[in-house]
Image: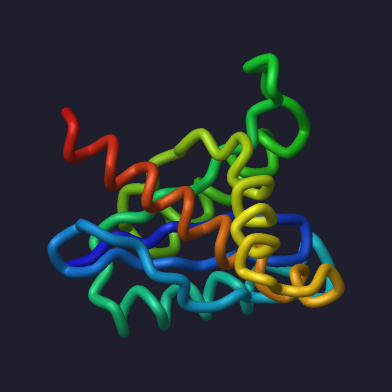
Length: 141
């Protein structure tokens, strides 16, 4: 079994999965959609990946504001969480994702990825950071 990490955005969902020992997170893909409200194909692709990687739970990035308040994106993320739980039957854990996109961008800069190419990878890398933070915290408790 594995854990899936998701970075849910208005037009994309970054996807990562853990290794079977729950030690590391690897980026899988970025699911793109044309409209923020068109989630049927996104959910179907997530279901395919759940089956392919034998996922038994999902960690979903929760986009709190830096002052720890919850804004409109948190509301949309809660709605997406409910859809995921209904559709997959798996538990979906909300995980604080503050600064994961910044960390992903920084890692790509350090890796020499040109600015114009970073958009292509940032969501998948953010999903890796979300899942890796969850895995690290789970081992410490």
